[in-house]
Image 1 (cartoon, rainbow over the protein chains, first blue to last red):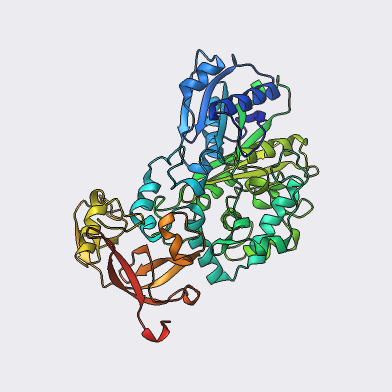
Image 2 (image 1 turned 90 degrees about the vertical axis):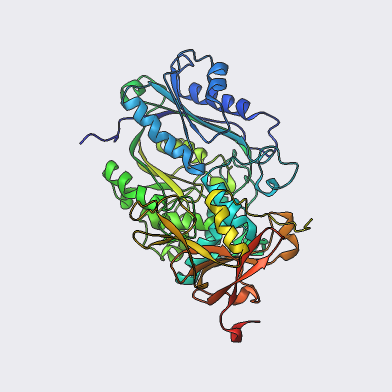
Length: 390
Length: 141
């Protein structure tokens, strides 16, 4: 059976500075990241003939007009919230493998601090209202009337049940936050560079929605990333060694648009996607040298580690103890600092970091790594993962 | 005019029908007329058998706590005076689940499996929200 295994690779990565107050439009941020990714790959705008656009902050027509792409052969949008960037790699890989397009640009940018901060959503000053979709309809009709209006409050229902059933502790969740922050101390791009964190700082940070404290939450930042996907044949002539997409899949919890009515709270999109991606790649969790896990909240990282099969359901609390996720541990996680300590770019920065790790040019390098795994998580638990190799 | 400052359900389509029953102090959920499965949120067709035939059947109103979170920072100004307050996942005896509040119970006393029963709060002249109370008054604060 033909699969997507090794039929596409990441050949260029780019990013902007990560700030709180970019003073730039989303389009401008994305154009800058795209230019950096093209320069990194050694391709020109004349080569790019496909877009896969995560989210809804960009118009393909504007992007093409600003880049001078006069023959756009393929363009599509992915709507899975923060799972969109990794899912976008899947569509990009399909497009180049089937020769629908040759070089596909996957860009994402936003002013996640200065325009769309969660805590300002409900205020009159909000610049952009959240887009109406199936999830927002559930929120408006069935969650918001009871005072649940934001992801930190919905995912807390999952975290609290995990805690009630399995005894997961504050310190175990804190270890995820501390791991991200420790790794960011080696990454000058990281918003939290030069700002170390202790477990005491974590434990005294204010509670938002139990069991989540403010330091269980990712950053809100402005910035953009871009990656370029093409075929292995074309990659041979480019500047860097390609990073191969070995296995890739998306998955959706059931039902995707309502959290309370899921039979099993811990069966998330990634629970469906992970076996498919591992089968495509022909590897198991034991073969993975590092992971970049979508870290909107500490417990969401833990939930995904269970769904990926790195440990059994209910065992992730003990799994993260003892420094396992640290750079010198058995499973280094979020080596750039993640959404917690580098920046929140919907996890496209996780893809950029994984590519750099596999090129062996990361700021904080996992020695001799060969295979890495990146996840996306979005909306009410949609999931995606890419298994990448050098 | 009501001075109720919290978000209200928009009540469009089938969701509006759900809240119309609440206004009559009836907790009703869709139940498939062909295979008998209860469902919530409201849906156009039965995911189990594909049927478009349903009725709004009255729930026992009895259920138990499935999960919860205690919110210490409101993200809507209408809830700021209420912190800390718990949003609770309630599992009804019919098998469907919904988000609600458990009244007359300190948030720290919430636990998985706590038995509850529905009550109705007329928050505005137009809108009634189903809420819950602990079934056993002995555990109420």
